[in-house]
Length: 395
Image (tube, rainbow, N blue to C red):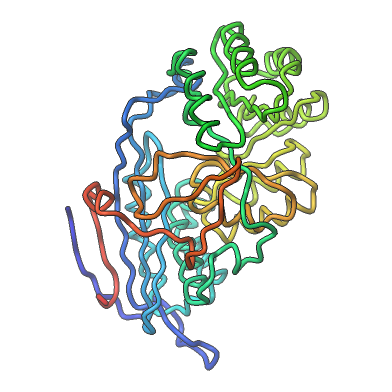
């Protein structure tokens, strides 16, 4: 493990605080942690030769402490590639937080964004901001002694939840069906399986088998991971309508707004997309273009909770449904604060990283009563940490 302790004068990073300032950030820690997966995982991007199987996930953790002793923790992540780059950029911009009032989250987000603006205002630059922004919201809710959902203003105390991790294309069909049974026994509220094979007849067989196992009415989603062209998506989407799917996810390239809009207008099945987009602006184009029925933002990818809340507001105004991607430990709170009934994606992959567990009951994930986001890093997460750097005064 690499450790360092670099002190930077807060006057360099922030303007002198005004009379309204009640606290200031004195210490920031950034860590790179590598989570190994139990077995390699493949979706359609692997079968089409565009990506290699997923074997590990890189996490960037940010820990923030203020003069008054308030603390917050947040994280971002990267699959397959980009983790070391995110960590490097996070270290570059971390000193910007020192001396700032932790209450001024929107102001701090903009400062962090402009600190790396020459690299763009989406992609890696925004993803490197996310751990800090999420940590500040965690800190704010902890200081208020409220779960983040309650700080934001919850519409519900639980969110309907579906499972993805049992339906990857690398999983044989008989095991997919076993996973379906296990998920239902564990109280899951919906099942999503991967599609997008070069031979759509294989996809059809798998979807048919899962629908028969689930029976009519149980929520079933499919995810093509951007692997179809417009004609395939249109034709195969029509064939899939007999299975009463809750949605078809990422049927086309993530940036094909016109194509997704055409599918959303022509198919009876809802279209879901947005997980690969990395800014509020990109999601705004998707929503304003009427390109989806379910928007699927990912707070660690778009830059944190601050831009995610903007996406939520626009989605609500546009009448779109919400189904955040991955990171249920964060998205549970955000989905609970969305006006329309959302969906939450369940992944057990991250459980070894945290000391706490979320509770699933009757198809819904329960909002915990713990302050903030309600999680802390486990000893296992610390053991998987490969690099850390600190800025400011060590608490």
